[in-house]
Image (cartoon, rainbow, N blue to C red):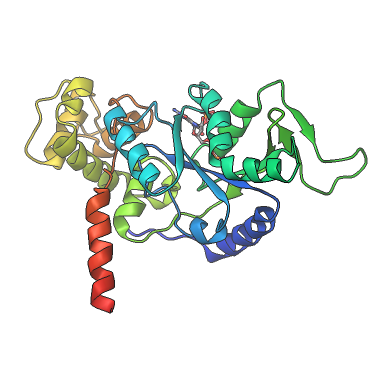
Length: 297
Ligand code: G4P
């Protein structure tokens, strides 16, 4: 399966983000807790150079909590301020204010020394499509928030959402583009539903997903569909089709229909809490980076 992203979108998104970056102190980056690396575009590091950085592991309600903890640690070791949120039901949203303030401690201190008190921290939300940016903004803004920035009759200019005395949030998120460094990134984004269905082969996708689940989350297919787990992913899909009575008119198994069930059940958390990629050991990464550097010298 091959994936691509359209450069036209990318250029416009990048330009808009560069403009918005000039206005803010802290970047709140949303990633999907099920695929924290594949849903993160590393180009943001360059765009957000010299900004304070917060990472929110969103949709943690769908991910494997043990792995989410490890991802939190992984990003913290890289210097980010990290927390988990479920933007859909609001869990963890309250922690975000504190984490933003902690991330900007240095700036608050600097302002205080200069006698500047109560200057709000300005933040913006960024992330690839479908990661939950709008849901998060609605959730954190809540009903109490007031919008500031636009004077009556003036349609241009930025809208800021005043979250509290300390933080103002840009009301439009920055859209990052997915970075398909290798095909496995595209595949994981397809699993979570971040790539348009029309360009996907749902049968192939479900075969890949079933293969992953059988290796890393043994028992979850049995738990959902009551099948005896088979040796191959194809065998498992057939067993699911059988159990769910997915049949074509002539009586043959309708594997595409079963494939649709599997991907849909996964995306909606009905197969359980599942993480699709695991944090590389930070030590391992650092050692590798160090030896690469040595090679270059
Ligand atoms: P975006 O702005 O980054 O593109 O994402 P958006 O907020 O539109 O969210 C994409 C989908 O992810 C939405 O589902 C939204 O409800 C869901 N979502 C966002 N945050 C969370 C979360 O923390 N947990 C879970 N489980 N889901 C989350 P949708 O199916 O497109 O819409 P809807 O059916 O929920 O209305």
